[in-house]
Length: 230
Image 1 (tube, rainbow, N blue to C red):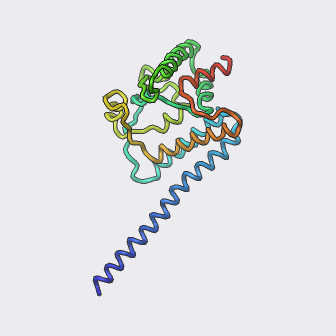
Image 2: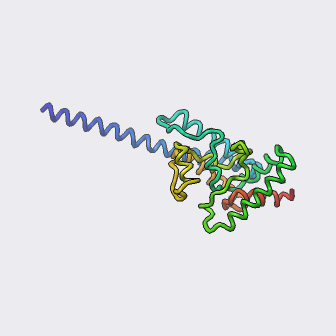
Image 3: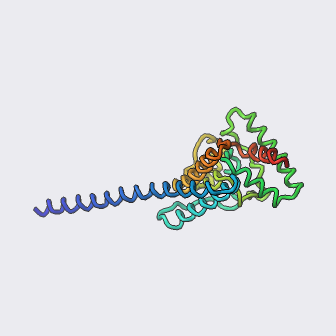
């Protein structure tokens, strides 16, 4: 009889924990649903797509910071200022990002620095066009400074914000080494937040009747300058 009671107690205890875990899993998914709704409502009120991009970035940054601060067992990241292997990967940007970046560059870069940047962007865009597989291209970002730091960090693309790594050697192996098709494990919640922000910008552009496709970073910046007549 004692064994049967023990079996019943253990089974009931496990069942209770399982129910709690199912509830928590549903609440975890609801967190992203709430983020999606918040992004949609906020971006719909943005004056321009550049404003929408800035607001999407701010919301994503806040959500990611909250994940790292409040959700337990977050992995220790190897990412640090001056660590730049990921700045040699190809970056796609959704609508509004390039406009926000160009506005920032026009405001803070000197005329000479802007001219030099455009030359680097033109070379990068040509390299992407010529590459058999642009996704496999390893090319130093034209916006990466001599100190290996991003010169537009405040307005960097969502994909750059999304990327994290637990291991610098792994990044170096994938980017510079003999494993160019390999992956780098991402923080799932952090990455998904930025995927949601990217999708929200694409949706908002569609809702406004604007082109909604993502575009390579170098070409997107050059096109934005061309469109503005600058």
